[in-house]
Length: 386
Image (cartoon, rainbow, N blue to C red; front, top):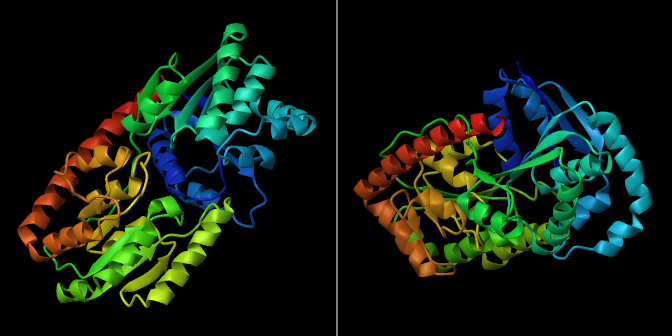
C-alpha cells in the first residue's frame, strides 16, 4: 500500500536541491502518494511548480511560511530576539500548519528551512509522525545550536515523533553527526536525471562555469584567470568561457551585489573570452561546452554540476572541496587545482586541451563512476521510506 507523504520544499524557485528532490520523487511516484507543498514567498512566478507538473507531480499546494524564519536561517548567528519578537505571528502559522499537516504521518522536508514548520508543529501539537529531513547543505552553526537544544528536550517528552536524517554526501553527514550525535544519518547522493551524452573526441574550444551567483562559488577567480592567461588560452584553442547561472533565490543582498560585481569586473578587465549564458537547463548547457571548471572557494555539500558533467561526457577541473571531492574520486575522474592557483588552473586546462588521450580517459572513468553513484542512490532512496 502506498504511503501518503507530504513533501515540503523550502523555496518556490528551481535550483540544484530542488531538481535533485524532483528526480527522487519521479522514481518513487508509483510507490508513494505525494502531495507537494511549496512555501508562499510572494514570488511572481514559481519555476519549481512548473517543473513538478512537467514531471507528472501534479498534486501541488502552497502553504504560508513566515518570512522572518526564512531570513533567520540565512543569518550567520541565530537571532533569538527575532524569534521571540515574532512569537504572536508564529502562533498563527502553527494553527495554519496544523490544519494542513494533521492528516499526514510521513513528511519529507527538502532542506533545513523546510523542516522547521514540521519540527515546531509536531512537537507543539504532539503529532504522531515521521520526518524525513534531507540535508542538501551543511548545518549552520548558530542556527543549529538552537535546534539541537530544542530536539534534545523535545525527544524526552514526545516519543511519537521520529526524525530520520538524510545527507547528500559523507562530508555533510560528518557535520550533521557533530550537531545531532544521537540521530542516525543516511547518505543519499543527489540524482542528476537524464543527461544527454556528448560525443567524445572533439576539440576543447568552449569552457563552461555553472553556478548560482554567490561569492563562495568562486566565479570571479575564473574571470581573473581568463584575463591573466587570455593570450595563452587563445593559443591552445579556447574561444570562449561561458558562465551559466544567476542569483536564483534572491534572498541575500550580497548575492545581488556579487552578480553586479562580476559584470563590472569583466567590463573593467575587458575579458574578451568571457560570456554570460544566464539560467539554462542542464541538458542544454553540457552540449554547449567542452570542459567544466568547478571553482568553489569553500566545501560543496555535494557538487551536482560535477555529476551532471560526468554523465554528459564533459571533463571536469575542480577545487574538489567537501562533497565534490567524493565525486572526483582521488583525481581518477577529473583534475584538481588549488584555490587561487591561476597558473595551476591554466595548466590543467592546457593538459586536457592538448592531450586528447588524457581527456578521453577521464571522460570514461567519470561516466562509469557517475553511473555507480546513481545506482547506489537509487537503492538508498528505496530505503528512505521504509
